[in-house]
Length: 251
Image (tube, rainbow, N blue to C red):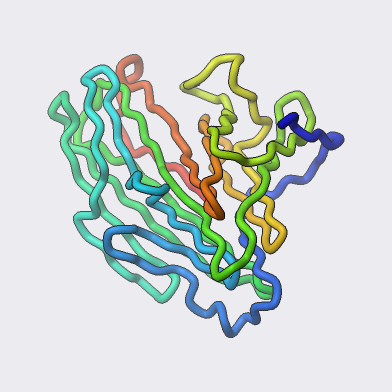
């Protein structure tokens, strides 16, 4: 279907929320959960976000393209710091022998009026100098809870100043915020900000990454579920990764 365009829009927030009309603040006291075999889950009254899973795909995924290596991160330790705050720690060796430690801190909560938000801080910590490109992909999914309608469209703030509404179907919609290491070419729409809005008749959501580094967004619809991912790459083959790299996401 042809995309729908709206006029240029200012003031896009870098806060991610899942409005859930009709739910009171008391119903949302706990919104962040850990589910074995699924990963971190954020729930509102009308939608559930799986932060580590899209269909049969588990994540986060770590790739070393030059070595042809891809690994699914399994937490070495899951620590629940508070009802809506958790710490996940992963460790893995890179093909060049560098030990990598990945620490993820997720905090979530309700702002009232049925609005739920979550922010993840993702840290990649090499034990030495990482001299290979390393790519991270974060599969995620958004499911309608109960019999509510599923995600219908994406709202994409394009770099040419337009807000595009792309209808969701069973094919991938791609959009890239290009800064630092770029993953795609002109065939993929460019984003002015690393933000992807999600529209449904029963709820709305937004997904974003911090604007200090590039991010490739992918999304498709399967039934009432939106499945997608965020992907980025550190070019360690050109500039070795020698210190902690930090990214933040909201969902």
